[in-house]
Image (tube, rainbow, N blue to C red; front, top):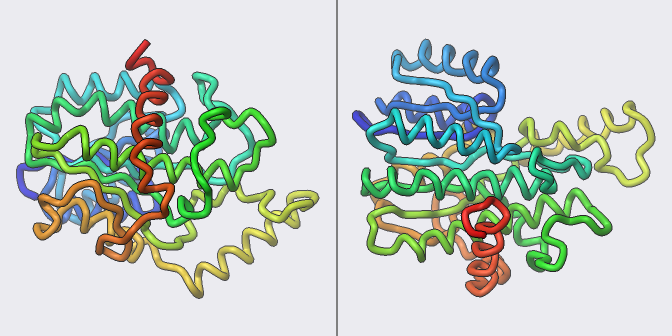
Length: 294
């Protein structure tokens, strides 16, 4: 990866941080795109120390703000001569019905719309740097929803935080596939993936996981139960990052595009994840929501 540039969103913790460290070890210029500059600087300092790669930098990116996304993209487009890999890794999970700065339901806004706008704003740089790759971290959870509710895209009726998360992860799969179709012949590939079941900071909003749970104490117990279960049956951050790393650097997948990966190999997504009509519709709706199309 010497001479190549990689951007990773949400790279200050979890599999994003592990991925950033791996890219740095391979000699890449690594850009940590994070909401908290303080946490990102701590992670970058650690990665520089561990890898000896001083070319690990930090930029502010709040995916819950389209203004922040645009500002970040401008900084990158103005300052970076190339972009070889964009890893859409950041996400939120299971939060109450919060809204982004622009009034979007938080999980859909951060997990899908923020990355949708970011990717589109960096496409020219990715094309210029081809062969290049876009890697979008989704989840097996995408398979447990029947589809995107285009009549309530902002989830204003009967909000369910678990279903919201699953829809946002389905949106990741659909977006990645549609992006691949639109980028055919450009030398830019697009793939999505399931990293495995991992206990990460995504779960910090799981205080209401058990329906009817009252008070913070029971919520803490629920989190401990989840953490214990995942600790036994799930993956470590290092294990969970391997599929992302594979999609980002493996030579065997250099020309592979439009696929969904799990455990470092292509897998078939859900039927809803292969709905080309829904993918095209989601793209059109997303363009309007983020202001790329009036």
